[in-house]
Each structure stands twice: as structure tokens, then as C-alpha cells.
Length: 337
Image (cartoon, rainbow, N blue to C red; front, side, top):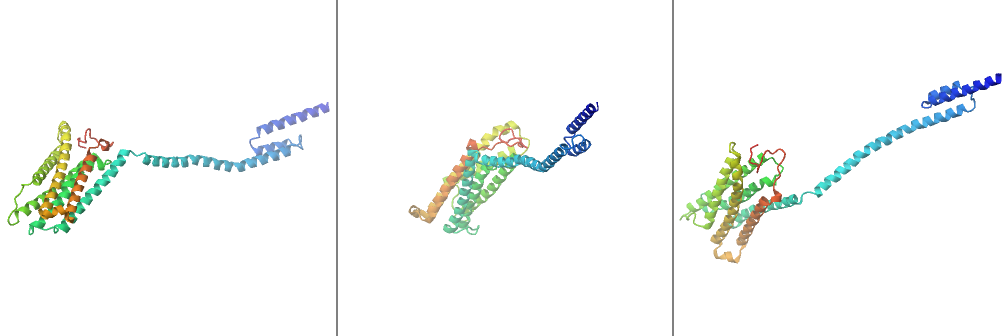
């Protein structure tokens, strides 16, 4: 009986130790305490097991910072990858830029270079071959203001005013309207001064030279009249509030057409004026192509190239400015903002 009782008590002690150990496995400190209470039943095996488990717990605690570091690194990887992907996409966007826009930018820069070269050559032509500039006391030199101001105002500024809607495509429509009108106003002022100088050069000499007899003067004055009518009509329709929308829509195609027509007429008149000046000053020597004649012809060619580029850039459909989100224009920017 006593042996059976001892076996039964030993079995109960073993079951208690097992159950306590299972419940206390997650925490190493509790496991050691439980082992102490059950030391009488399993004296040789339990301390070794507890030491092994304590070592494993310590190793797991040492490995936790490494795991945390790995987790942080894994979380940072998507950020780095996103930056790399964004940079690649930016490069792709540049490489996939609209070919029409690339062509426009190249031709627009070429147009500006052509126009600036044209102005420089006209100044050189006047200074080196025709005595420079003068006032009313020297009508012959006062005339030289005429080709210079006509080149700057009635050709270069006129052409850039036409291109302002396409050259500055990311600017608000209302700002472009004011810029368009402002450049036209500057061109108009220079044109009026140029006309005054040419009339003075004819009227103030002795004997006076007749006015308005050449084809150059007829076409030139026609271009100026068209320009002035265009300016007044455009200002009243598109800048002064109160004009009905159907009138604006009806006027816009005419405004565009006659604007280009007046510009082409100005180019044609300028080429005629250069030829007329060369013939009057060089006479028979013009056929021998002296330096003044060569420079005259080069300026005329630049006039034609500049005019052709402006007309092409202004009429090519693929170069048309796209409406911006902040624009409120419904058609051709005719609605006042």
C-alpha cells in the first residue's frame, strides 16, 4: 500500500510539473520558478532543460534587434525603389515628349535668331554704307530711321505678337491677350515714327521728293492701314468688355486672317523698299554686287525666311496652344476672364 501510494504521489507530482511547464513556456522566469517547486520529483533532468530554455530565450532576445533592423530596411526599400522609379519616369517623360512640341521649340528659337540677326544687319547696313542716323537737320540721314524702325517694329515685333499665343503656351489666356496688344502697340509707335522720318526725308530736302509714287509706298501704307484697323477691331472685340459672344466668334477668323495678311504684306513691302534703296543709292554699280548690295540682298532673304517661319508656326495645327484648366475661354479665347 505504501509503495502504491508513493508511486501515485510521484505520478501526480510529474503531471503537475508538466502542466505547469506547458503553461509557463512563453515566459522563462516563470518556468524557472515552476521548476524549483517540482525539484523533488525530477531532480536530475529539469535543471538542464531550464538552462537550455533560458539560453534559447536569451538568444531570441538578442535576435530581436536584428529582426527589427531587417524590418526597417524592408520598409525603406519601397521608398528607394519609388524614388528610382520616379526618376526613370521623369527621364521617360522627357524622351517621350511630343515630337510636335520639340519641333516647335526648335523652329521658334530659329525664328528668334533670324529676327535678331536681321535687326543687327540692318543697323550695320545703315552705319557702314549709308552714313548712320540723323535728325531733321539732315533729311538724308533721318531717312535711315525708316528701315531700322520698320524692321524692329513692323516686322520683328509684329511677327512675335502673332506667335505670342503659341510661344508662351503655359501662360493664362488673359495675360496673353494683354501681351499681344502691348507688343502690337509698341510696333505701332515705331511704325508711326518710321513713317514720319520717310516723309521728312522727302519734304525737307531741296528740291522736295514726291511722296507715295512707288509700289513700295503703296503696299507699305496698305499694310499699315490694315494693321491699324486690326488693332482697333481686336481691342474693341476682345479686350473691352460688353461685346456679344457671337460677334467675337464671327470676328476671330477674320482677325487671324487679316493679321497674317498684313504681316505678309509688310514683308513684301520691306523687300521692295530694300531693292528701291539699293537702286537709288548704288545705281549701275548694283549689278556688280558691291558689299552694300550683298548685304542688302542678305537682309531681304532674312526678311523672307523670318516671315515664312512666323506664318508656318502660326498656322500649323499641331502647334496650336492647348487650353489650360484655369482658362475660361470657350472658343479661341474670346470670353473675357
